[in-house]
Image (cartoon, rainbow, N blue to C red; front, side, top):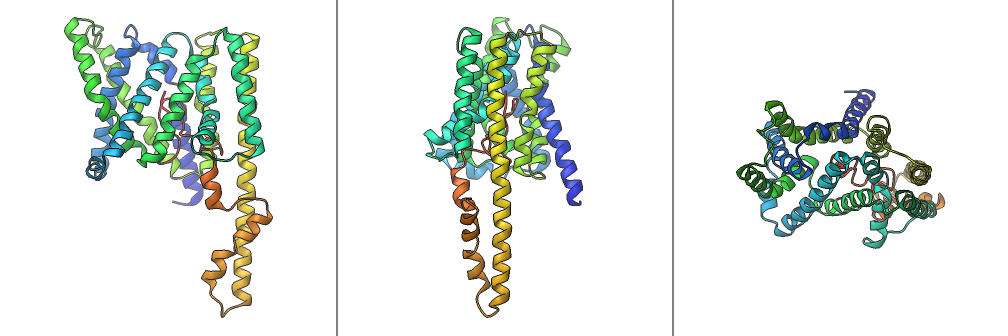
Length: 374
């Protein structure tokens, strides 16, 4: 497949993934009168079933044995599953309680939370524009607190839970599907036990609301796995900068749905708060694009200088010259060497790739870490 076709295919998969996540608020109300906790339990159970089927079809199970022999990674997966449960549960409750706009806000401010985690926990250094964006984001939360009459706790819980999830995923090193399988494997027994308990008490809606309702509950697993598959197919075909720009499709769609479909109120104070959040994201995106452009220019200059050195001194070691040459042009351009800069980037969300991606609906947003999962 040509590069142009690869890009078009990657864009199609990316728009499909983020488009599905953006439409999640339309699905959860279909499950009423089922409560948020029961929906969450069904999502955990059926997500494991869906992802196991997909992994069997793809024959991707060789990772299970090595993982089971690593207790520390299993512990991290358990923590990730717990944080993801909080994220999913709050998102479902928020949507079905009439807080779609505030839920969307959580995924808008997630990149700012990821940056804060990078500075506070990973001791990463920020550029001036990134500090400005963080300051604008803090001001936005203050304005929204005034607008809501209280802190926007749904948005903050979603942002911080997903930021924590992304932080854990950076250490796990599992691909999206494998990660979802491991995490829902941890969730499965408690969720199944809760559903059995509800059924024994006669409080379950799985069979009492008709076949169609039961199928919609089963569908929770497939709407969780399908966007993740599309995201993975997109991530291997597109640069992270493009993926990072696309991550805002989902919260933007949810924001529009909250206003147009669910008719949620947006007084002037909330518009002001959202405007500040969007300004902060615009600053992050501009800074990331500018940095990426400078890096590419510096690397091209480094390659040209290495080639010139090899031509002028044909008897010298090309390996030695090409290994040391890149540092000078990078420094001249005011750009840190790639290896250093990679360790200092707050997260993929900050650069403009998502942090762990959320995007809403699924998990962390880097090709190997999963994607935002409301």
